[in-house]
Image (cartoon, rainbow, N blue to C red; front, side, top):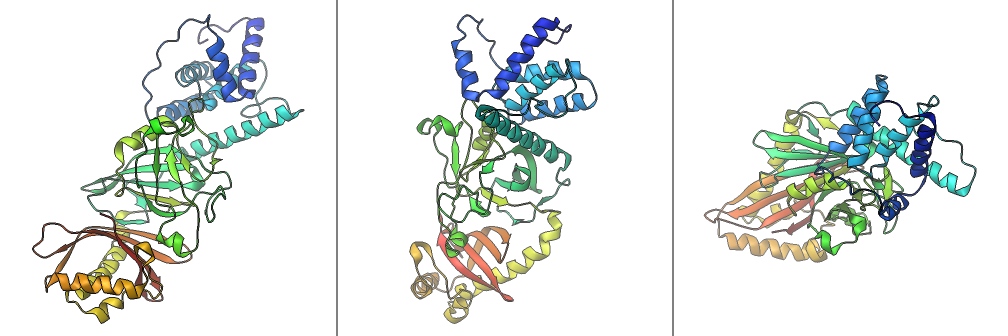
Amino acid sequence: MSGAAPAPAARAFLIGLVVAALLAPAQAQVRKARRTASAPPPTQAPELRDGQAEKRLLAVYKLIGEGRHREALAQAESLARDYPNFQLAQLAVGDLLMARTRPIRRMGDVPEPDSAHSLQAAATLDELRNESRQRVDAQRSRPPAQSVPAQFLELSPRSRHAIAVDASRSRLYLFENTGKGLQLIADYYASVGKLGIEKALEGDQRTPLGVYFITSRLDPTTLKDFYGAGALPINYPNPLDQSRGKTGSGIWLHGTPPDQFARAPLATDGCVALANPDLERILRTVEPRSTPVVIARQLQWVAPHSVSAERKSFDAVLNAWRSAKSQGDMQRLLGFYAPDFQGYRKKPLDEWAKVLQAEARALKGRELQLKDKSYLRWTDSSDTMVVTFGEVAEGARTGPVKRQYWARRGQQWQIFFEGVIG
């Protein structure tokens, strides 16, 4: 296809094949390929690597923008061969072939729908256009160099990676936590809920917003093909969600079915879905319980030093809590807890006070040390700080890992949830 242009009859035949493939469901394409027993065995596709398909697609778009259609077609065909389930690659091939016979007004330029089947195909094309737009816009509006999402005030060295999702851009960002702070190492196109974001109820087909943590890594052999390379559940509803009466469960980061490279920007029942090669990279890097996942309507990117004042200010609050507990000053210690506090197993404050008193007595006058602290801030209608640390008594080698949720009430920070996570 990358050599001389085919004869008119052959060209028309090829165009018809491509357009028909675009309008048929992806599963039908796969079944047709399986039935073609007389076809020569396909050459083995190169190893799928995260981000490579999108990078190659954007290179095709760039060639089209420069008017280099012959090169664009050759690269689009190569991309479609390597990733036959990548619908945007197939669409680029179809458009480039069609452009040889008439001008193309827009991506997927086919006749107006005149039947129910055509209406469904038109809806699919609209989804593909939206996916393409989100991918291109994300590359045009890259985060400033060395910037981080504003939620990451401080991350413990125990958290080797972090994830942030920008729903407005259909984008997931993967960070490595290095000695020099968070470094953006990859970012991927991602799909969210069919009805958007701000999940509140079971079955509302929305993706939650907030600060979460990966809780486990599910074995792909135990999952349906629908979830692709695997799944990473997150702790929705978190304590803040629960305090607001939000319901639902089973929110995962997961892959896509074998016959589908990516899903539309709004396509899931509330999960975050990625292409399988991209998810495979994440599966290899994240660690359950310690990898935070921030899901935001739109990420605010800041220079790391710009949040140092907030970090130091809250560090003083947490240190005052530590001091009160070390000294066994129960009156001062309980002043840090909100009246509506609930611990694990829904323990109210009066019951939790007994736990705190027992822990303070066990210290026997020793100072508490808070190690490996992480501060993640979530601001919407209220201001919340999600704090994780190791609580180690002076002279001890280890201690429990605790997580607290603090809310700003007026000018004061108060704990509304606390529990041991490890």
